[in-house]
Image (cartoon, rainbow, N blue to C red; front, side, top):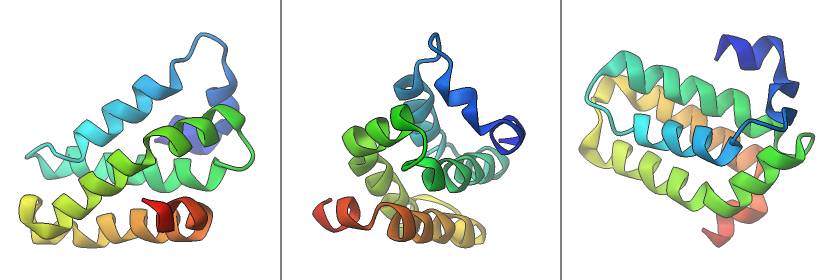
Length: 106
């Protein structure tokens, strides 16, 4: 998360598998440990605003965002601790703000 905040063009590295990083983040949203889920939520709230400016990120979100939305809704629906709801809400807010056309399709 800190690396993404300091150097968002990290996702432009040719040897970085953005899809794998994204999928790991989605899986981490389902972990039982609150600190892991909180960090993963923070990752997505930093990542989603970059959909438009970093092409690989936009492409991965376009192709795999539905899985992210599903994981967030499952967390809100009872899979995650109630103390994490604000963090999941931040992801929904970021999706709504930065990926609205995709969100309505998903």
